[in-house]
Image (tube, rainbow, N blue to C red; front, side, top):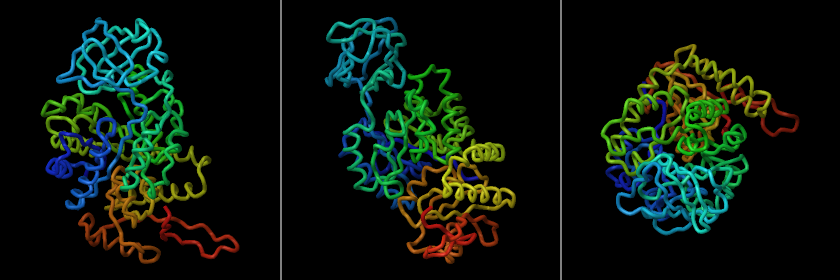
Length: 484
């Protein structure tokens, strides 16, 4: 069985050379993530162009996800190897953009002294260090270190979400986004989402004309408004680092399952992120717990798994990608496909009353394609979709048969690099109607993924009966709707 769960790898100083990118693509990177919180726009655009060029040279369709910084609060840069904060020690924290030191940690949030109250907890670097505000001096906060540890670079600072006044996306986010929309970025991740309105404020054209919007679930408000956010977004990221700061740590595994289940029910790809192979930032192999974490994220239903520091600044990004791909592939083989599809079918029936007629038709056809492929033991599901909607609808059922996702839209193919089980394949422009299935069958054989004589299932829209005055008749069973 080919790997179905996708691998997202963050590109950084350790992995942006042409040689590293080629090796990471060969090792299993499906989507390259560019985090804009740590790099200049110019560097990120150079990396974008390099990834596009190399993926085209290799004939491997790799999607590109740009992660907007959002109202992310960060500490001022720490020189050299940084510093170690010991539990019980006191240190000053003050607003500012200058460098931090062993005596004072600067934080780039001007309202820090007004918004943080005595007794509030602040977390640095995905919760590696936790401090408590114990005194206001007028110019700074004095904090006591509750959980110590090392800090380096420009670590994020988690301020309780209900304290922050800054909304997402920020004006800087929109400026950065405009630059990447111009070059045709595939996906954009929106940080610090609290409501569906935040997602709509991105303001780009709906995908595939615009980028697929990935809403990061990392605040308490986002969990409270989860269903509406999932409905408004194109995909979701389970950002476990900030979730672990917003909620008691024992809640995070259950939140992960809840978020993933909600995404699958609505046919949205979902990325599980943060510290998946954290030990491989320095070590050549993961811990046993990390391997189990990856497998369980697959069993939960993750569409994709994400590497952050492991591939951006780690000692061996290629090894991290290969390890992630290998563990995910093995977990795919043990996934309980039949039980998962039945669970999704129940969610589907519960949601039918909330769907538009157009979505209800597509979902019914997707379920039929999954069931047909399962019952007949089909070698593959061939799916034609202009926007990727139908492919994602089928993927939520987690069919055993691989999904060959055909589209005449190049950006759709790049966006489908994030979708579970989908192998995106570009069709020539103008393929539609009666000729579509024959051309798709021929193209599928040419890929070598199916052979002449194999039984395959094909997914196509049922048409609606024409209303009086309609210029065109309805499409029959097996016809292709070019808009889905």
